[in-house]
Image 1 (cartoon, rainbow, N blue to C red):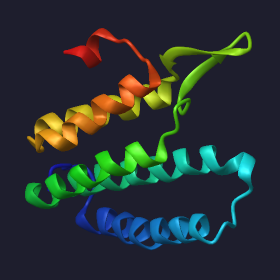
Image 2: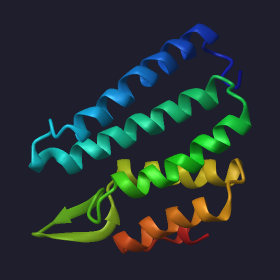
Image 3: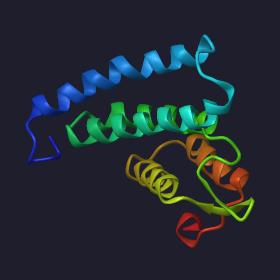
Image 4: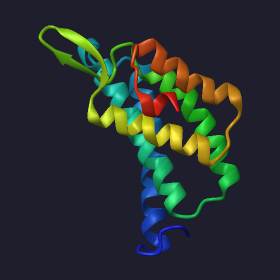
Amino acid sequence: MRDKIKNPEYFQKWIDYYSDVIPDWYKSLEINEIENERIDSYKRNLFTMHMKFLITKYSGGIDLKVLTTDISKMCIEMNNLWSEISGLYFYRNSYLKQYISSAYDQMIWMLSFATLLKIDNDSFIKLGEIIDRNGVVDILFEK
């Protein structure tokens, strides 16, 4: 276990929760239960759940090999779930080439996990594609 404050049961409870909820959210997307104007927001929330799931598994001490597979899959999912304007600041009737704080945090988490877990180049490139697609320029991301 990497987190020494919480007990293993705490993490298992959340792992079980996300394991149950995430497939249900995908099913709602597949069967078109989500209103069109809510789809982008829904997908961002779905990705947020994926992120919390990954953080929970890491903090709970899940094997790093399993997490490496998870993060590679998440790079693909992030590419699918984030739209071209997903997470960008909207100011004075236009989108800025800058992420809102929650999207910025998620990208930092993804880049950090990708670096920590030494994921394959193709998965890492997917993250760069998202940043490029959104037109975001940030010194930290460039490093």
